[in-house]
Length: 420
Image (cartoon, rainbow, N blue to C red; front, side, top):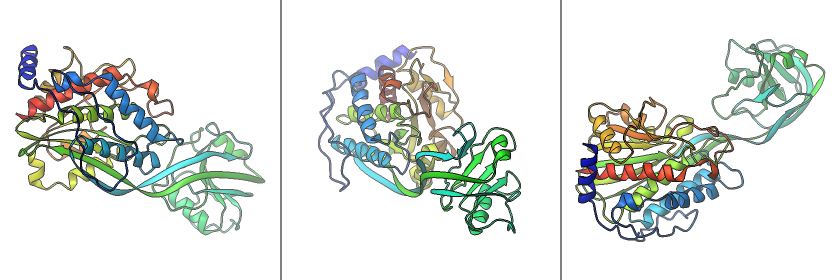
């Protein structure tokens, strides 16, 4: 049955897609001058190649810049959004960009604490303030209330527990402490967050052993960026049909790396789909592609997009397909499992990939969850986690471009099928 479906699809959409045409000017500069892709051959999905995927991946690597990150709110994030918007406009898509603020925390240099080793003995809390603090250690108990012993210019050492890290930091800051160290109650230093920007002094977690041994004067240095920055969703559409079929990917990375597989591979795949379908978009529907900001900090961009849709606009979306990590080294394409209306999406995607591909249940772990919560049928492709997941080594060498091209081809084919 799957082979027959492939034949029908190929016959229906066997056209030559035109070379991309120039679009309107949004006033936002491009991160790189978009170049025309090769003229497609027999069908859009057959024209999708590893070379096209790699072209986009190189642009995303360049967007990450010297900081080697495309995290939401960074320069790399902004350059990524500009590149995507420019490519879509060049292909003839109507492009909209949704701007919103997100919290950003990034250490510009490794923190230091006198006599301690980063990672083993201490870790910086997310949204810590910056500073170069030298002072005498002063223990303040839990640090949840006003301290009668803490003197201005000292470094507060608090026990973990009872109140939030934010409250401990605000109390220490108000009392004039130059920094706050929170001692772990479980041995190793812990990863923690102040939940948002605002605290001005350095705040770090220290191991139980290191915290017990702290005494005298010490020096604490944190060089970090902590604040609120603007990021953008980028949405492109082509065609004028009442029904909408969609594919999407998140455009941001984590702070610690450029995110070329997570989710540069998805961005490259969806861009290739968009460009190859542009000359002859699926008949009978509007084809829409979405690139979501701030996925790595809680699906923020896709949630914002769906929440702003009217009930009628939500009903128009017949299918949303999510591509998150579709080029994992030594990976295997898996299909989001689906029932009911989601099952039609799964079947359409399976028609373009090898038989026997496994099911995948990602739950709420990626942007499809924002659509599913709104009752929109969802599906997607995933090729598994890899050793560089959320690490600095998630660069060009960490992406299987041919595998991502296969995922893109299956997505293009599914969009055509679901548009009918």
